[in-house]
Amino acid sequence: MTMEVIGIYFVWILLAFGIIAAFSKQKRMSISMAVIGLLIAFVNDRLSAVALLSVLVGFGVAHHTSKQKPPLCYVGYSFLFLWSLSLWFHLIPGFNNVRVLDNVFSGPQSIPFNMYLDLDKPMIFFALLLSYPDLLSKIHKQNLQAIVATTIPLFALLPIASTFGKLELEFSIPNWWWLFLIKNLLFTCVVEEAFFRGFLQRSLSQRFGLVFGLLIASTLFGLAHLSGGLLLVVFASLAGLGYGLIFHFSGRLWAAVLVHFFFNFSHLIFFTYPLSSG
Image 1 (cartoon, rainbow, N blue to C red):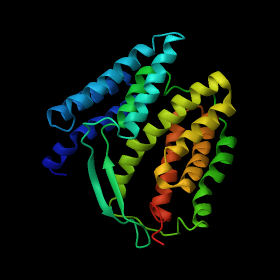
Image 2 (image 1 turned 90 degrees about the vertical axis):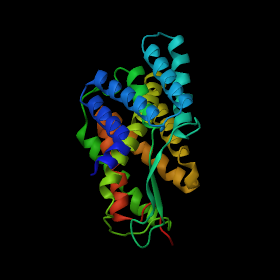
Image 3 (image 1 turned 90 degrees about the horizontal axis):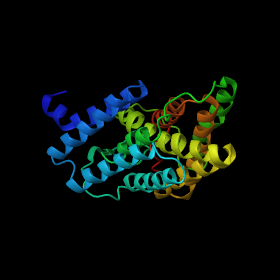
């Protein structure tokens, strides 16, 4: 990797190490690397003043929300929910996300695929880390039998999807698999699981019960994939239900992250990705 390439992607390298630091229980280092990454992005015109301000406001609200009691904390978490959705759907202007894959094919039967390194979506994870001190902590002892019983039908969703014609069996290892691995693991699965399982499912389950928390978080996860069509919403909701059960039975966010990632990576390697051209 040349120095020029390292310079272009240095911000995301910092964010990646910030996420790794968070899972290594180095919260202060994690937030510091995120803030440094933001400032470097701003200096290099990858982040506008409006975007930088929006992130700093989000971080500030997240930090203060963690210290508040009801009903003030509910106001803070409601703001963070809407703020996170704004980042998720790229509604806040000024983030110069980089397209790293442009109309590539994972295999001959797959449709073209684009992939971006986002600056906005990873900020959701760091804000939740500030607002939820126990986001990455162990909740309870894990239930291995239940985890296995959940994982099997979860991964069966891929061959089931192929019966609807949206996917086809296609073994391929594209030369950009390593880039997909880094981006999907650290900047997709971590962010999605932190928001939908660590934040939504956990907080709703504590207040209204596990079934309610599972169903709402999984349904919202499915609706977040609405751009892919109704069938994708259904399958994403079912997958979200599986990730939610893994999170519940393991008591650890990283377990849900890893299962989510291996599901996505299995899709890439063994099936047409993201969909069949047929």
